[in-house]
Image (cartoon, rainbow, N blue to C red; front, side, top):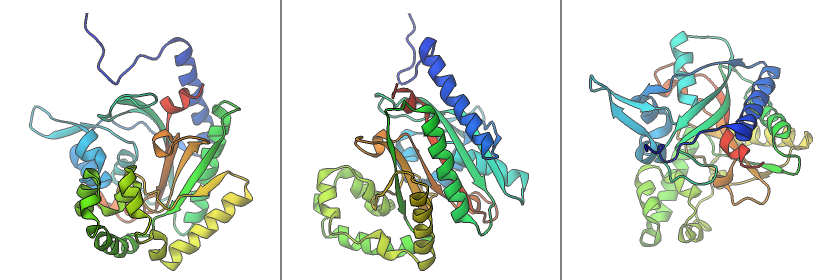
Length: 315
């Protein structure tokens, strides 16, 4: 007998009905918010993700399925959806705001466990090309996310938006300089992963789950103290909108997300009582420089993606 590939699964019967209910709910909610469906390729060039997600990110260095085609070009099975949507937007040379949503399989070489597979299912939404109304579009993405989860998770399941502002690119350059200076004093106590990130992507150390790292980070420089006035002002505006809408949230100053293309506002949605990011139902944020990283013009972007498998496990 030939076994299935580890980290993949067949969805059938009641599980298939759950899957369809969740995906169809997202389709309906996205359409209510004027998003249009997009189907992105499963195969992409490796460069798309080394330039967008970050060549030193865990996704690129540890998790991507990368292989040469018959002409020696390095291809990947897409590990996430945003970069492919933005690449398409650049190719089409759109100059007006576009709102896309998708539902697709993604692929990452991770340790299989409950709610985490090597072939997994995502639904997501991306807003590209908005001008000076980032706060409005960010809040709209939060509302869409809240409406979707309220419509598809069990009624007894409560969830919270964990939010943060990681500042703009210039803010993080200044922050990283001081963070590295501080952490080098404690270099002998850092975890192996954090030692690697110290040289290549120091901000990601804030996301460490290692107990020694967390103890060291207590007295580390605070990212919030490096945010520009514009970033801080927009963050406060978003908080006010979320609060007035009675959406459950809490600020998480250590939330930086695992994708290098984010700037300013980031968020994750976690079930109440969960252990954090590893249990997140979804997440997203701003990515105003992603288009230029991929060879396009500068355009504002905000997106969110949800793990369908994680949501299915709530039932």
